[in-house]
Amino acid sequence: MLDLKYVLANVELVKQNCRDRHVSPEILEEIDHVVRLDGEYRIVLRDVEELRRRQNEVAQSTGKEKDPAKRSELVTEGKGLKTTASEKEETLRALEAELKDRLGRVPNMTHPDAPVGSGDDANVELRIVGTPRTFSFKPKDHLEIGRALDLIDFETGGKVSGSGFYFLKNDAVMLDLALQQFAMQKLARAGFTPVITPDLARIQILEGIGFNPRGNETQVYSVENTDLCLVGTAEITLGGMLADTVLEEKDLPRRFVGLSHCFRTEAGAAGRASKGLYRVHQFTKVEMFAFTTPEQSGPLHLELLKMEEEIFQELGIPYRVIDTCTADLGGPAYRKFDLEAWMPGFFDGGGFGEVTSTSDCGDYQARRLNIRYKSEGQKGTRFVHTLNGTAVALSRAIIAILENYQREDGLVDVPAVLVPIMGKTVMGAKA
Image (cartoon, rainbow, N blue to C red; front, top):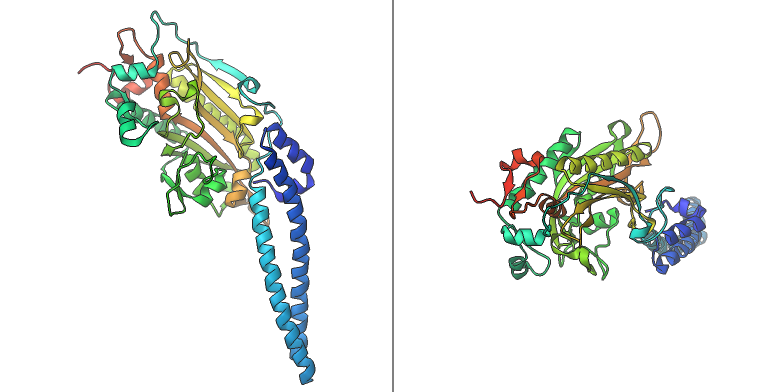
């Protein structure tokens, strides 16, 4: 969440930022509510402080008063002050809770270099890496390949779990596990601490990261009669690890790479980008997460992007890098880069599809989760900056590999970097 003092001092700037992000009009109204509530809070706070001052004054006078009648009057006044102060303090707590709730709905500020606009046309293509393969035959999409080689089974997934669920089978299982190993080992060598996170998190952790765990718009599954939700990404659990923690500046940055299952309702998702494995209710993901000082966050954001690019370069998948426009940043992100892999069979005639993203969230999440750091020899603490980046979303990486490495005979070559892990060079071949 944004710093309240910053919002109050920059109301019009914060509103323009919301307009640039194309948020709903209700969010703009929240900013006005925040200003109003802060004014009410300050008035009640002054009342409470005056009541406390008078309580102390009356208590001291009562102890010194010798006249029984005057003493009785002071005792009566003290009781009345206590009741009034209690009521005012309850009002103060309610105002503070509402102020925090409304402030939490306002999105993060935006990096000045982020492209302003909405939709794909507003995103800025930074570079294309690799050359899409020229096929001597018409390439199939991953669903055709998956059915032919008995790798992906949506029919049985639908029967067992419902639409949008699937079974991976045979070499697709080995490919999924090989990608996990490849990404985790690469990032561990680069200094990231490997973690396997829980698949459930408390509501307050999701809210701290910036997810809406309740309501019609949520993309998250909630567990009935509990305060738990299935996570949509390990970003939630990795960020939540250090909630309410004060770190030492000398220990920053701290880099983690987490493995988790991801569960998403995908409410409202439709269109060609919902086909097959591209948009499903459950998948596995290797996620990077970092805690930094404010000065470290910009360079580390580029480091996360570099790791994502290296992974797809080593997999031999052509891709492009996108500087994401303001309307597509999501609430917590200050700036976001997307990596889109070339998928020759997925779109008509081939096209780029998002496979990873990396976001610098500034202190937006840390302020909500109360994650701070202190510097040696200095008083006080500062909020850390948090960053996240997808190393590999397994379902989409599988699409890219199956489609880019397909052969005319129907089999699929294994990317060279995965051969030592999978122990074979071709998928779908009979032993």
